[in-house]
Length: 105
Image (cartoon, rainbow, N blue to C red; front, side, top):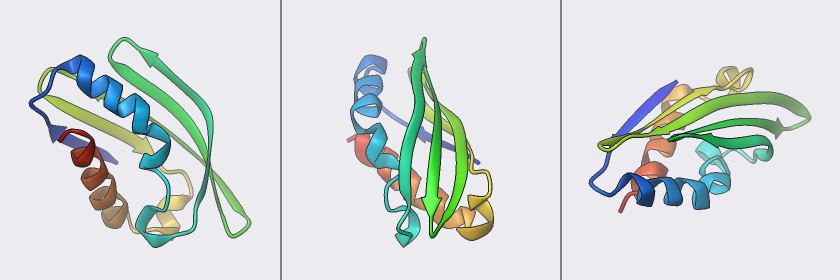
């Protein structure tokens, strides 16, 4: 899944916002009681690469992705693993899009 949101702030400001709020981006997705564990999170230039584990009702699934910050936008690419079968992608996309937009205000 790919989400791209335009911004009008400096790249550094956006990077700092993404870094500060990263853990909260994935909590409570689409009303599901997910437990998110951060396995890996590291900036490489202007791209934040991450690996998470999501737990839902005894099911555990890896989530991998990257958030790239450019001068004009923020792009999040996420592989949801098994969760894409349990939670509608449209619901996840809309919620994450709103959360990212909230970071950019």
